[in-house]
Length: 601
Image (cartoon, rainbow, N blue to C red; front, side):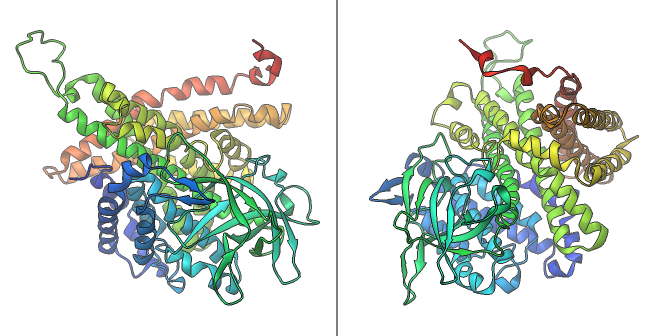
């Protein structure tokens, strides 16, 4: 029997009882779906995760990709994954029917992606990257570009990638140096180097389609001069056959974790014969690419949540089975040992993991719902949903990534020495999850994005909208037994965020942006804790109503556990906001005063 990697009950609780995903079907775009079809889709995703992805979890890690004679060789299951995801419609699940998609709400699509990533994160990345690249071409490419490149991608025959990073231009994309020279045939000749590109070459597909940023000769300096191109590994030759496109793998990176998917360094145009095809308008590439980047940021948070979920499930199952010690008050060695879940500190560790995993998943699915509403709504609802999604994307990317590492580390602790060994899966989960605070913009970048851009956009409108959403949840919970105290604490914590934000805005005017953003990562942490606390109060409110109106249900323990975990989060995590606020309102510019000499040996 396959190991459990997620809570099916929790996933359906979030989708149906907290988010009411079926209400999306009142919009014409989603009208052919309903709750039953959503549940059938989740069932199908679970079967694929169990039968196709799960069996390769360890093997793909132990048999990492290799570079042989210029070609990346991956685990044989990758070809089957891509083929079955293509044939089953999973790559195009959220695309419009006009593009062979299912028009599945992202809310449900991301729930399925969570299931896939929990079973085998590395394997799930191949189709996920392809979907993101295909969606980008569909969004901004002309019909000829779409007709040429998208169909083989959504069929799983061709891989899609996102190729941004260069040796001297990581997060600083304004320093990007890959060039695009007009070739006189409507296309461009691309030349440059890209590093850390996931799945940019492998033998599990026939071709790879790189969505690549480059600078057209004569373009403006900085980010205003960046354009987006389709740069395939193999282009379509004169007679329709695939021919080499002068894109070669210079090296393959050997990684701590996430070993089942190759990360490559690409050399582009060494023979001056790399053909690239412009996507959309010149010099708009970064704006276009941010669609895929923001989707990927949500995907990174989702992947981290999924890995932490698998680690938590492993730790929970182990704690129920592993017998060790006796209750503190019982000293008789003749009495039988108890399961370690009977020890208070083990329950504390399990509560921490559950609080992180289920709080993170709730936020990501909420963001997914806003993405759906932003796509199909009009007027105020459309604007509100788009603003809230924009504001919370840095949080949904960073909190699961950073806290997921701590949760997965705690899972190892539950296993004791066994957790550090390959005999159990949690050591691999720990290695796999470590990349997530780095992928798609480091935590520091996300902090500066949140504080320097998102909080202040439209004179703070997005923050005001979020505060209204949080206060509405507080009002619902106020006065309810077991929840009134949590509501009051969340009100105080939200007030702390507003006070700190006002203080930092004043600091920006008085001392400039460098001082304003110096501790942006701490602000992100403060903001994230309050956001996840809101998600937990929402869950607890729904659970409390279910217990009150449906006492005696078989899942009463589940609802009671939700309320208990919410209480845990408010008791153990929310108090951290006080220390963060103290630091953020202290005007001592400690890190700005530090220089290279400060670290002399």
